Amino acid sequence: MSNWQRREFIKFMGKSGLSLSLLPLLNACESLGFSKTPPITAIAPSAEDLLILSPGLKWENVISWGTRINEKNERFGFNCDYIAFIPINENESILWVNHESPNPIFVSNYIRGGKRTKEQVIEEQKSVGGSLIKIKNERNVWQVVSNDPINRRIDGRKKIPFANGERIAGQNYTIGTIANCAGGITPWGNILSCEENYHDYYGENQKTKRSFTKISAKNSMGWDQFFNYPPEHYGWCVEVNPQTGYTIKHTSLGRYAHECATVTEARDGRIVVYSGDDKNDECIYKLISYDQNSIKKGDLYVADIEKGHWISLQLKDQPQLKKYFKNQLEVLTHTRFAAHEVGASALDRPEDIEICPTTGHVYVSLTNNKPRGNFHGKILKIIEKDNDPASLEFKAETFLNGGELTGFSSPDNLVFDKRGNLWMTNDISGKEMNKPPYASFRNNGLFYIPLTGAHAGRSFQVASAPNDAELTGPCFSADFKTLFLSVQHPGETSKSIQNLTSHWPEGGDHIPRPTVVAISGPALDNLMK
Image (cartoon, rainbow, N blue to C red; front, side, top):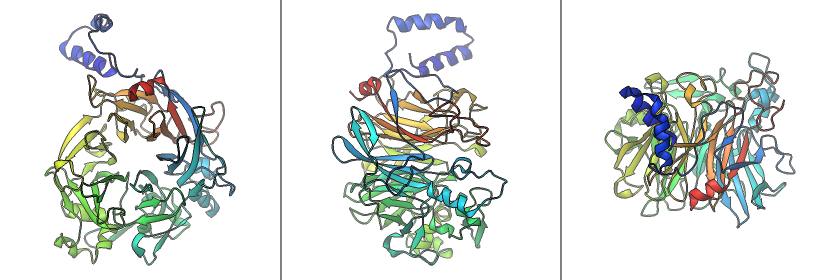
């Protein structure tokens, strides 16, 4: 019996007044074969400072924060997130790993409230962005190839041009990529890395109907106190060539807190990119490119979930936007304002978006919206008309609600396996973890959700994260024998090096280190059969 079935039975008995003493009878029914064997043995929620996996799964450390990756003495960045797996041959591959944010306590030895230096901020800038590393499978263990020419950092200090030679805030380039959350892979093998909570670093010039509101990042990362970089240079999608490291920022997808950039092809070969804006009451977008091998130019749309329609954000299609914008680049620079002006749906923190390989249906994590009383979120399913990603009409329905009934809260990153089943990580913040209304879920986890068969739509928790950590960036190897996973911000709520809430992965008195792990084992092999 799955955890879901057990929870359903207990809730039924509680509502009907039946005694829980009937549970032994239920267990006997299971033993007699009245319920089908679950596809994988679920684990119970845990609050231990460990990475706990279902029986039949194991993990290996691929790379941790601070590991030297090349002869330039560049180091693997902090808070690993999205992972992209680019095969080279049967045994060698490239991993791209996003680095979402630094924790100053560990990265720069800065304690909030103390005196801060420019040198400390520079260390933090070096810790974000992304890492390219070559890995090799030796005796079924993935290991980093040290000092390979592939190995390099794209960080918060790298000069990056804008696509199409666009000039924003007087420059055709930006310094660094920051707040890199999820991403995607293009058909031509390049990586898209998304800048999410950019406002935490250099603030924001928020568009209003009358003017702009200047928002400082002083109470967040506060890099704007040391570097006068325009906020408009951040919040974009970044394309990276994994072979050469060449990097550009695209304006075509708009500017907002991009959680992901999920790429597919329309029936006519044009490129379609889905992206969610990870903020309360924000929107889902998609770009339809003009060309079949580029996303430098295209039309950007925003979803009206109620009407099942993609609304154009092109200035030529929306005369009302001409009251606020002089050209299309201005619309794209202040996408949120434009989206709400044209009537887009305000949603509950749209995060990751993935496409089922067997049905073509689009799945969206709506993590939560606590100010509106939605603490547990849901997974939304979008079915494009004629199953064509370039269609401007769709149907939307709830696939699965978060909550105690389904055993998970606050869905975040998604990935599909080769059989079309869904894997999901969740995102309960470190400050709220193990407290009401999240107490029963304990630490964050990884969940397996079959989409077909006797257990379709039921969640099985297969991993529990260390203290304060979030499991992110799930990504399969080409043969689906390995699931790569980022263990992000263990010990996030630590007040100081002397007062740590986690010591993972090394244990003892060691400081916690964000780490990419490789998960494998017979339980995973069985699911892929």
